[in-house]
Image 1 (cartoon, protein in one colour):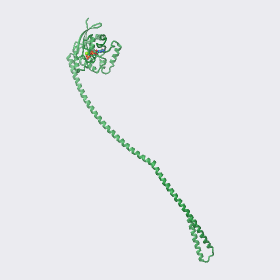
Image 2 (cartoon, protein in one colour):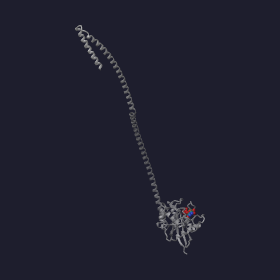
Image 3 (spheres, helix red, strand yellow):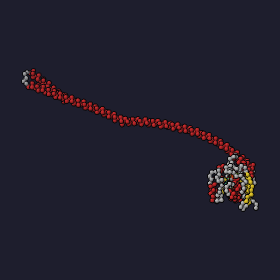
Image 4 (cartoon, helix red, strand yellow):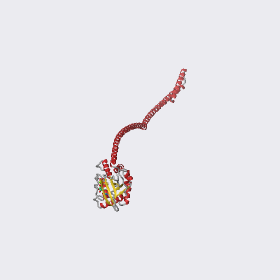
Length: 377
Ligand SMILES: Nc1nc2c(ncn2[C@@H]2O[C@H](COP(=O)(O)OP(=O)(O)OP(=O)(O)O)[C@@H](O)[C@H]2O)c(=O)[nH]1
Ligand SMILES: [Mg+2]
């Protein structure tokens, strides 16, 4: 039976399970598997193996690559090592397996962009399949479907990868120390082989020098972009400084404004308080002092009135005394008048006596008249 020939390239983030998956496919330990934390595959390793499937025999060239995001190496070095993977496959590639543990990072998304644009060409997308590792339920279609839906729902980093790469295979390749690891890996291998059955189409990578030229251009572009980014960052920090200065000035102005406002408020408050005190004083005067003054005035008037009453009583007393005196004088006058009248009735001796008497009568009449008018006053 002529074996089915296939060339498979494993790419993906460091620790995603590329080497383990390659070993599961080969049904042998061809590539070193890392412990969880250390990047294991540093160079491109390629092995060609015969694999017996359920119904077919395969002759598969497996290319294991350095992991994306290897912290020990510069990006251009990683890319150059990936480029040599392309060179390894210069006869043609049937499948690129983009291995992922279940969640794409931004780093993977960026790396995928470089892989299909720089190392290969957009045509490689049609030959690429996402291989989702660490999925124990990979034989359960419902679980697989819901995981596919979850992957497709990725919003940020993995969005573009999922949009471009349509096919997803689920496998589980437990570490060698896990019980039953071989059986589980064999089931994964069967899934991978079933997929490889359909991968007849071949993608031809460009020549290595062309790829390297593109890598150099890409690195130069990236460096230029980084320089621009640095310049922008400097400009940004300068703008931030200016902004801070402006903020400080604004704060100062604000402070001055608040101060002057407070001063004005204080002044107003003072004026208000002054006016209020004045008003209170006035009110106090009206309500307290004015009645007091009025009371004093009233008391004064009462005192004057009493004095006048006393004076009046004195006058009345005086008047009564005067009247008594007048009455006594009248009495005396009447007596004197009576004496005179008695004398008048006596016979007149001569004319001289007669005229003296007339004059006396006249005088008495006048005195009596004056006295009466004086009493009537
Ligand atoms: N449970 C489980 N463990 C896995 C699976 N695939 C890989 N691992 C474990 O993950 C670790 C990393 O696996 P590797 O195959 O070395 O990863 P890698 O992608 O080749 O890593 P680099 O060579 O550093 O790029 C190992 O300890 C594996 O045993 C899987 O499907 N299930
Ligand atoms: Mg590896």
